[in-house]
Figure 1 (spheres, one colour):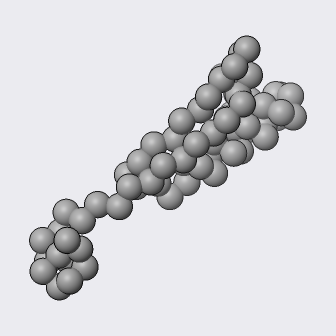
Figure 2 (cartoon, rainbow, N blue to C red; figure 1 turned 180 degrees about the vertical axis):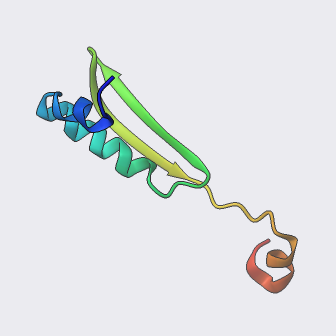
Length: 66
């Protein structure tokens, strides 16, 4: 089986662009989602939704949240 980079190099340009954009959308998301919308077998939209969680009680006590 080839290296991961071999897979990317053998794809059409638009596939590489989509893979880069999906990777960019996923980068740094701690909590949230990335939704990929497909029409007629083609990616037409990428949505990124991030959530910020205030689970740390000390953060809330110090005035950092509700």
